[in-house]
Image 1 (cartoon, rainbow, N blue to C red):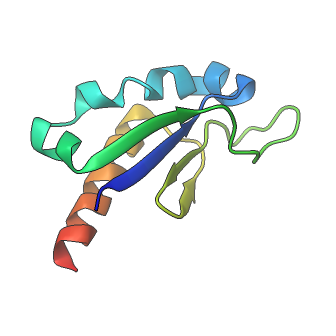
Image 2: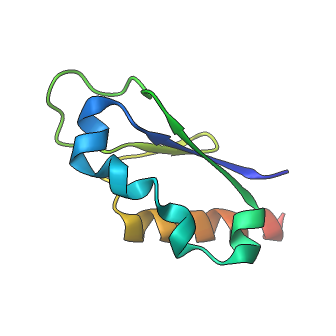
Length: 86
């Protein structure tokens, strides 16, 4: 079963870095890409008006705030490792 990565592409998240996060596949190895399902979604519904915690990403059931491409890459790799250890 693949790890699900949902990248919020709502206006606030998109403008505050979500657009860059959508290029995450360029930062993962082919083996890592086989283990994840990456989706841009309209909105995770986690912010109202201006929210300094954007952008948001959901990896399986975990919500992550203030995500950068570096932290997203790291969190995906941690999720892959945790899945392999189960």
